[in-house]
Length: 308
Image 1 (cartoon, one colour):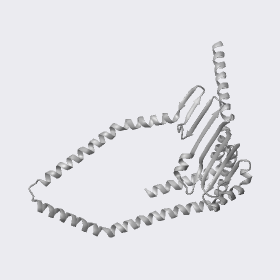
Image 2 (tube, rainbow, N blue to C red):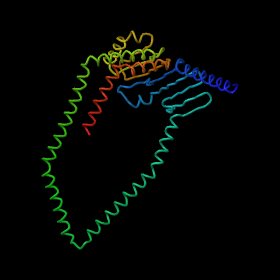
Image 3 (cartoon, rainbow, N blue to C red):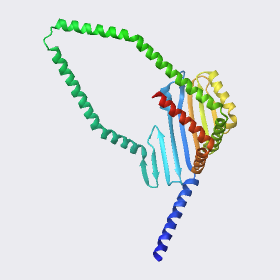
């Protein structure tokens, strides 16, 4: 009896630990921090991709449970994704590259064997050709035969041009017909009231998710110029139209004469995993959305079968 009690208590403790970890994973949010900069303080009279590439930098950092789980990726200093779990440091990019290199190494012997077979086949064809050329025919007659063969091949090509053109036109007609039928299907799908209902539900779920994904704090500060007073003025007009969204976040100083970008972006936010899972379940379990996805999959499967 005491043994069963110990086993039961151990299982109960294990269950409690699993529930605690699951609750932490679902309800404790992941924090992220995005930093970016585009440094071109001098600017220029013309736009230059080289200046943009040299002045561009950025980083993304994520954390969970404070310093327990951290990850970061930065450009251009460190383009690898590094994950830290307590004192353990894991370079995920190196592991992915290592698996890819190992796969290429394992496939290398097969590729080498195939190349050797190709070389042997080319050598065999070359020897057969040399044997035919040395069969006792004169050089002049061989040239005449080659010219005659080329002429016959050219005439055969000319004779086959109408049929080839007809085949090409028929192939184009079939392809155009498939494209038109595909467009017609999606137009009819968009006119269906059930489709509108499904899209409305999906957009509502994505909108609720987007409220949690949008950074709580973000700012874009610096100087920007598009090399032309009119273009820079249009940029300021766009930012003014978005003022309810950008108020307190965007502070741009215009440069009306040069192509110039001296900008700094900072964003911080938190994402609860339970919100993401709830939105995903809401979309996956909705009957109208599943019916819409099923119709699209059935159409695409039928279209691939017809194309094959």
